[in-house]
Image 1 (cartoon, one colour):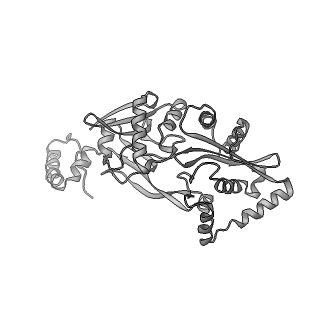
Image 2 (image 1 turned 45 degrees about the vertical axis):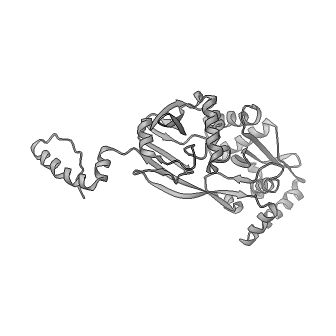
Image 3 (image 1 turned 90 degrees about the vertical axis):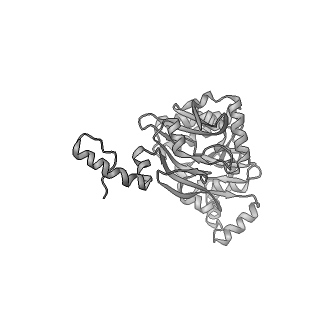
Length: 347
């Protein structure tokens, strides 16, 4: 195996075409979160985004995009790239330790790794969970029927909708909004509510404007807004590709919090999925109550890290070798105190 590492912005058109072929052939990698344009866009505004190109002899078989932490010598998650994956054929098996060694990193840390069943690792800890989604491939009415079976009828949202309209005027949902000031207001609400710093706000603004207004990507930016008369209540921004709409940022007007404007916005997004041209709404990997309220399916992911196997760990993994070398090293320590501690003491 050979691994070449380049900054993501040096990805050639030929490499991008190969990446897209891998994505199209692997159903686990469908959607905007695995498209090279997402990583290229983030790389324009965020330094230290790299991609490892993995070869079997001279054949390119996969890509691993990551954020390089120079201090820890580790591959880490990239801001606004909610999922991690090795982009390659579904049938390909990957050895995480060999890839890390070839890249020259000590660990690969991830919070939402997909398509992980063929990734082999002897070191590291992982936890399996699911990222929540709304699957509308059977239609909106069937979605509502399935939610009723688990005793969710959205009656509370209907009451709050009527209450808002009685006090502030009729609700108006704009599925495809183009106003920059709406986007900026959403980011302002998000920054204040979650105590985001100026660096996050700038990166979010640059990235969202790139997908909404630059026309330089195959990923479609979707900005949706909910109003009561002319009062802006809640805003959503997502990325759409291959029938999947992925939620990137969503926030609401804090003055209307008691009326649950964010939940009403989500309900409208789901009800108008045909107009918005998607059949799966991906909430992303974080776990929030509102996601469980709306979701009817999950995307399997794992959280954790893979680590480079050290010489000590390789020796310990071979039982007969460990048992044979340990007394020899202990004897050498008695003769030469400076002999390094290759084999740790047993408990």
